[in-house]
Image 1 (cartoon, rainbow, N blue to C red):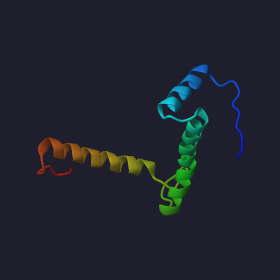
Image 2: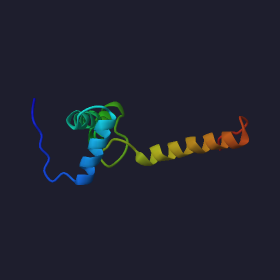
Image 3: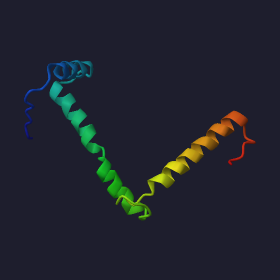
Image 4: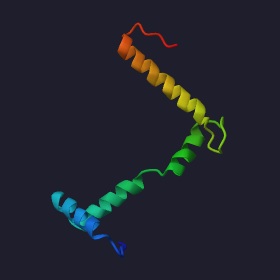
Length: 95
């Protein structure tokens, strides 16, 4: 197992880490390892876009393969329809 040393670790973060580890009935090292593992298990935005580009064919600009204006407009339309149905009931028809 490797070792990690963090220099100039802020005192307030150290205190929070100690408090949370104590609340979880574990060591600061074990708690910090879990927090880092959880963060590192999440995809970065670049990794997410790379994976998304493998699924969605290129249609937009910006090198990301997504027409962001279209996505935003579609999401806005769906949200508006949902709100109108909530306000007017089931008889609401999308414009």
